[in-house]
Image (cartoon, rainbow, N blue to C red):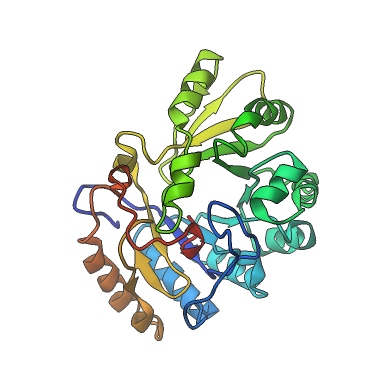
Length: 323
C-alpha cells in the first residue's frame, strides 16, 4: 500500500493527459493556453503502465484530468484502458463540459464511472465572463443527456469568487434542491500567476459551512478514496453540497491522492516545486522498476501544502495538473 512518512495512505490518483484547455477562466488561464514545452503527452501504453503500477500499490480510483481531457481524440481509449486495469474500482474524469453532449455516450460506453464538471455560474452571461465561452446551456443539456441514460454520478465544481459568483449562493442552492447533483464549492487557491486576483476574490468556505449547518444540512461520512470535499446533505434537497477548503486547519491531514502530469511527472502535492519524472520507467513493462521509483519518491512528500503561508511552489496555474 502506498504510504508516506506520516502514515497517510494513497488510494486515489489524479492522472493528467493534457495541459491544453480551450477555456479562458479568469482564475486559471485568463490569457488562454500558452504552450511552453514540447507537447509530448503521455501515450496510451504509458498510461496503461501507470495505472497498472499504481493499482498494484493499492490505488483504487483514477481521475482523468487536464487541461481539458476531451481535447484528446483517444479519450475513450484511455478511459477503457484505465477501466480494464485490475484493481481499479472507479474511473472518474474532470471536464469543462465543452464536448459533453457530443461525447458523453462514448465516455459512458468506455467505462466512465463518475464525472466532475466545472460550472462557475448559473447565469449565462456571468458564465461567459468567467470562462470566455457561451456554453452554459450546452453543459446543462449534457448533464440532462447523461442523466437520461441513467448516469447520475455527476459532480459540479464551482470556484468561489467574491465579485463573480458569491452572490449566486441562493440560486445554486435552489438548483440543488430540485436537481440530483453533488455541487462542490471550491475555495479559490493562490497560484504562481494570480496573487492579485486571489487577494481580491478569495472567499472562505468556513462561513458557507456554518450557514449550511445552521440550515439543517448534515455532514456525510467520507469514503476512503473520496476527494477532499466535506459533503453535506439535507432531507429537503435532491442534491448535496460539498466544500473544498484548502486553507482550513488540518486540510492536508486526510490527503489520500497523488498526481501524475501529462508529461509523466509524479507530483506529490498540487503545490510542490517540481514534478519527479517517471517517464524513463514507462518505456517497458517493468512494473517493479516503476513501483520502486514511486516508493522512493514518496519519502519526499511533505506534511502540508503550506498554502496558508503563501507558498505556491511551481504551480503557475491549475491547468498544469488539473487541480
